[in-house]
Image 1 (cartoon, rainbow over the protein chains, first blue to last red):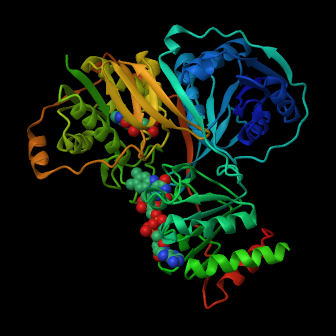
Image 2 (image 1 turned 120 degrees about the vertical axis):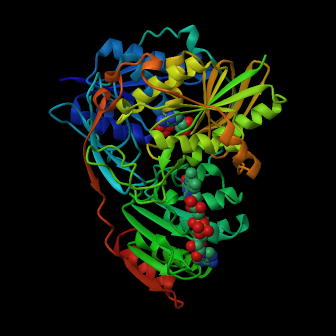
Image 3 (image 1 turned 90 degrees about the vertical axis):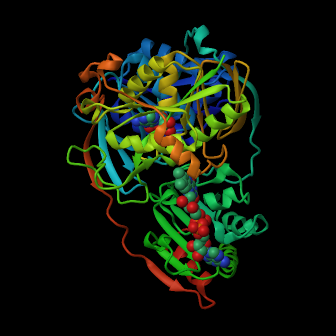
Length: 320
Length: 262
Ligand SMILES: Cc1cc2nc3c(=O)[nH]c(=O)nc-3n(C[C@H](O)[C@H](O)[C@H](O)COP(=O)(O)OP(=O)(O)OC[C@H]3O[C@@H](n4cnc5c(N)ncnc54)[C@H](O)[C@@H]3O)c2cc1C
Ligand SMILES: Nc1ncnc2c1ncn2[C@@H]1O[C@H](COP(=O)(O)O)[C@@H](O)[C@H]1O
């Protein structure tokens, strides 16, 4: 069976959930071979093997952390040359897309970004994408070279599928020309203790209607009662009420949770672009004409400062 | 020595319009009004600020690859304050994918001459966000991308990249390719004077021949990706909407419980 390279997104060996989704999708087209760069390969290998990786190619070099993106392209290219895979899959993160794009140029292949589903086809993998702010669904494939495809989080449910996951060292030479962009400093983001926005099963977002940073705890309290992540519209972010890392939409995160709750958000096209593929959508807005209501499974026309706290109390009461 | 800045700007269908696919499954550009991609306004703005910080010892060329109307995008950027435009236009470009576009942009950038290339974070129609990385790869220069803050001092470009897990301070020697996000600072509005001045600024028109690119390297035929199907997403079935008369929170909880979220 043909091998499929899967680029591993991890933090010191802790594999992030989108990578497990990639392994599940990769098994539809071939045998997943994971490429793990940086520290923690042994820890990662256990998880990767549980989800179907037949092999884990690993390399660690200071250059991966000291320079932006390009050294990782060198490493992925080395893996590509070692394996001659049927496809290369990467997570649709900023870095995943950049690495994939540069690899595609180097190996003379086409690239598809932001797939939301993937199946085997007669002429290679077929990728489903959601375009024009999720108003269209397309199916595409790559017609030249080895398909390089980046996949959005929440595109598949990770499945356990135990495989060997044999760890092998990958020989990587980082080119001088790949050391162009120095990472002078790196400040890790502080954890909020809440689930990651793009991975969460439930997201509760607040918009301009929240009317001030001091009111965002109202949104956070609902999120915490449901075990949800917190999102924000760009209006709320631009006003400085909530960090940009929590922005949902075209220029923020794209989320596709089981449940999305929008409070005080009008539902502009750029916001919809980042949440329209959520399974169930709920909105609370005092304006019955707000476009967000066109999307909802359940909507409440009312003041969020009345409805949200009441909902939070009710959730807590029911959960006991 | 003057700093040569090339800003890549894309002409896109208005995102608030009703966007569709044409019969050949390329983006229908006739249906909806086009404009300079809003995200590329941030790129023009940062280029202008870099020029101002260099005491105007810089020249900004705005570059677009696109149909005849894409000239509007160049004019907008010129009216914001860029110095000159380059428009790559050729019938054979219809249907070009990201790899093809990066080839054309790279050749045009080399022909124009550059120290710094500035891009937007993503186009508002394709939303791939890969062009800047593709350009860096093709031009063989550092990529300093997705910056929420950028500055040029001497021959060095510095910037801040706010990633998912960390904030990084980056640095590279020129020549380099940068891209800036919509967090980099509001773009200025063209002044009346700027709009008038833009009419007189030079725009050079180039075709594939001028760039030594063969027709089969680009366009729909040359594309390495193929869209087989495009279906309009079915409208979501109308949901239940209730007016809060004091019970809204409870009713919502009832719904969520029914869906097994609680
Ligand atoms: C290139 C570009 C990219 C963009 N990217 C994004 C993006 O990534 N994400 C994003 O979100 N936006 C994005 N935008 C901005 C987008 O167009 C909207 O401006 C933004 O989404 C509006 O945010 P909002 O819904 O919170 O604010 P508004 O549109 O002002 O809506 C606020 C809503 O709150 C309601 N409200 C007010 N008070 C209450 C109350 N007490 N109780 C209940 N409801 C109340 C109002 O009725 C209103 O509907 C982008 C725009 C551009 C041009
Ligand atoms: N046809 C084009 N002409 C000029 N610049 C472009 C073109 N397409 C993309 N770009 C630039 O590349 C950036 C990223 O685009 P994309 O990778 O298509 O999302 C944009 O913000 C522009 O700066």
